[in-house]
Image 1 (cartoon, rainbow, N blue to C red):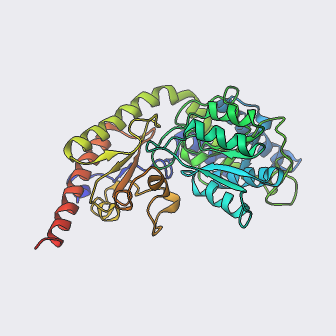
Image 2 (spheres, rainbow, N blue to C red):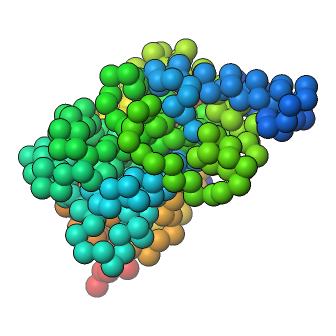
Image 3 (tube, helix red, strand yellow):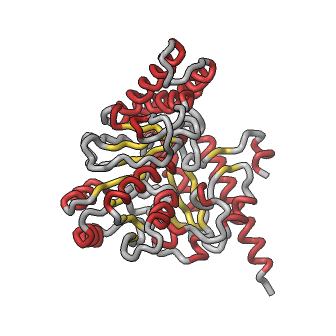
Length: 391
């Protein structure tokens, strides 16, 4: 429909699913692909590969303000979350999470604690998507030396967790703290010398690196016995066996370096575009509302409910705009978003919600195209539904 009208490529507003590779990361990945060498080999080619990996580790450490030796490269945040939770659960035997965690945390926690009464505590959230601090403190004080895993920013709504006071309360009770920072890293500044978490997971492709590579931060001195998921040659200091994905790791490092240099300019620009998108859609489509609107959110993420307008029908009516009807990792699931349900939305409202996520390459022209297209699509779907339920 709109693609023919504008004569342009579809608008990509699904950065929370995956971001386009940054030019710096694309070039670095390509250069590494053109080279040859196993980073474990001691000859020239192996040393070259190892040097590239070391540089990428430093680049990521510089972005996070941590030591390179505290970073373990993985295939992505899902593996990093599994690695963190399984190691900590084997050590502590109890996990506390929030109801709005990504499935990579929730399902891992459920699998680890299956048939173990009281080994998993799932904390509710308020309508804005935030955890009540008093409820959290009561839980960690009751359960003591548990593992606490609370995401830093929600993948569906962009709602940001005020993690510092929660981590302080958890540590005071003797708990370990892990955070899934997949959506936060590369979107806002993060200083691990100030944020007192024991472990943190991330994925490169959320901030412009290649898919299939991520990292787990484990703070030096954390009382966590080594508990690898895969056994073999003892790579990554024994935490993750297997030949390193040198091109992917190099691309991650280049993306991290680009973010470190460019983020200060990107944040206000992307926030302005997000606000334009929300403001226009809410003004043009009365009754629509933003989930988590009155809480702190990521600059480029908005979750908008269009009441009575099924998201799948809406997306089918706007093929020239790439958005999401929920978390990309659970796309196609028959049940509505567990995040929106936990925030108090009805099943119908959750099923009538779209997530738009903007990023470093999004332009104002693309946002305005998306506004026009979404308005037409919502009007079209509502007209069709009204006709089908008429007398």
